[in-house]
Image (cartoon, rainbow, N blue to C red):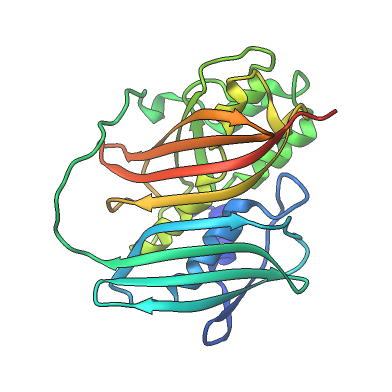
Length: 290
């Protein structure tokens, strides 16, 4: 396990300060606010710690309400909405400085057999043939992205091996492309056999690149180049089949629409052997600076 991954796991190991109240801290972020994937993953950890171990998340729905302060702790309060025979529902509110910054509802289910079908996995190259972030990012330093931003990106994503199939938005500024992006990802190190942990880590990563497809359609580089101001607004995930976050996962993303200062991203996450593991939808603020 790398030091960066160890640090990320520590970040997700919340302090329990009451039966249904937890406290988390933040790590250094690419921008001076709490990374949305972090608060979503921490909230899911908090919810999961109040649920029987044989029940795992099958869906979550969340809203980002305010910008998080990375210098202050975040308190997560879990509301036990329902404990049924097959399903458990939890609501989590994340609070900083006395105000809610994030709200999550999550539903958990015991495993059961049922009907089976899935959308086929799209064509994508073997992740082992793709360059790492450490190999890709420095190529763009000084062209569209300043070196300090490259360093922050590499530091913030050091726990995750994330590889773009095609050049990322900040590499092709001014060149509109199809509103679609693919990345392969896995943790930089092996994880324990704890299914909830793998789900929480996929939740963490899911907020990293989902709005890239919005930027690609307009030839924009995003926050890294300063030609767009953005932030996550809401986020939804459905967990279909078991997976491991320390094994390669394909994040196939697209944007069907952008309007009104907002952009929509939708995606599917597949295991390397072609199983559809997760579906994701997110809307975010996407504004052009004036």
